Amino acid sequence: MILIIDDDAGVRSSLTLMLKRAGYAVCALCSPVEALAAMRSEPLRLILMDMNFSLSTTGAEGLKLLKQARILCPTAPVILITAWGTIALAVEGMRAGAFDFVTKPWNNHALLESIRTALKLSEVKLSDGEAFKRSDYSFDRIIGRSEAVGDVLKLVARIAPTNASVLITGESGTGKELIAEAIHANSMRAGGPFVKVNLGGLSSSLFESEMFGHRKGAFTDAYSDRSGRFELASGGTIFLDEIGDLELSSQVKLLRVLQDQTYEPLGDSRSKRTNVRVVSATNADLAGKVADKSFREDLLYRINLIGIHLPPLRDRRADIPLLAESFAEKLAAANGLPRPSFTASAIEYLCKLPYPGNIRELKNLVERVMLLSGKNTLDAGDFSSQSISMPTVAPESATLDALERQSILQALAKHGWNLSQAALSLGISRAALYRRMEKYDIRR
Image 1: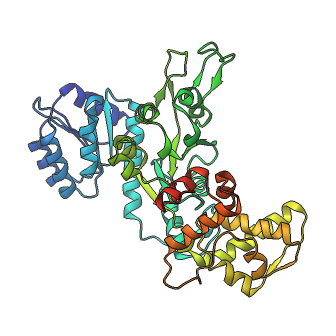
Image 2: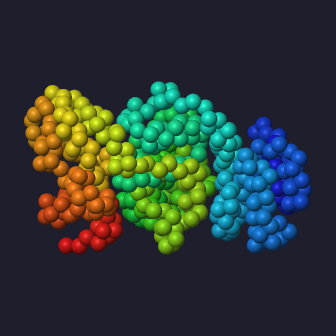
Image 3: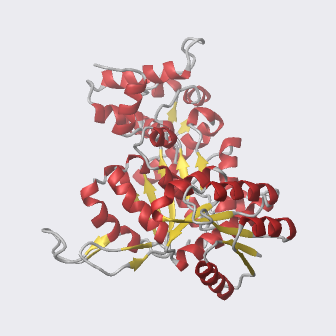
């Protein structure tokens, strides 16, 4: 049973008709008092509720009802209905435990998709205790047997079959794109496209054309029609990488399309519908960016129905030998080289590095040593001569932060303070290097 709570008879009638046509059993009520009685007596699968009652615009009564619903029906997800101008109220509701929010006038397709996703995820939560077999999923490109990696893959396996939006967080070089690809490969959309967009390098002036497409003549250089990324990803998954670096003006436009699942190409007055799953990634602290007003809180809730945090390589050192062997095997195959072996001392050395650039840094190091040494057996000395990072056997009192700072200083010195080359050698982006230099107060 889906419970609808709204004091507008027209809204109740429209929602009831839509949900019944979709095959759901519905109970539509007009007041919080009636709703609480239903929550106590009916086995509810989902609650769809307005935030304002009795012409009030504060939402206080709606927030109170939401909190009571979370207590009385803890397994039933709650989707809020609000006007676009009161999204701040919906954000308050999300903080109080709502699953999602839709704005009036709602898009039937988008609302039904949110309902299906909420119901699917509630079923997933009930079956969390089921055994997990890695071999049952398409995780071939993800290397690692550590507990940390296992926990991530279990979560991916549970949420991949849904259409829930996912936010992947973690330091640069931890494999966020691989996890996004794994979500897609194990989803119902696996046969559709996987489209990656680097939002960090997308200015506000290019955002609409790149994401929504344009028609010929829409602007000076629009010599022909062009499909946007949302159209190219139709039926599949769109991966919004570095979403934390997206400019505020573009965040509003992105929120609109994620909310309504419709958009208008530049130069076209007709709306187009998008049918994509959204997976986002960032190495930024989005909660901190929300606090300093550089990232919209309502957008954060929209992209973060499910959060996956990837551990840094220093927290999964047991995977380092497997990763090193894999990188060596792939490089050898790609370049017609003999596959090298690693001595015990080489593995021991690799396992002690701090890796500020994480997996990407390890990959760069293995490939650099293979290409420059020309040896079939790689020893610790081969790696120490090419490594930017210092082994963690340096003073026992040294913290990981101190070791990372030292690694960055070494990379900068080695490359004459050329930030691009230093970042490349560390296996991190130039922007990530800037952030670490600010963190450790590194100045020339």
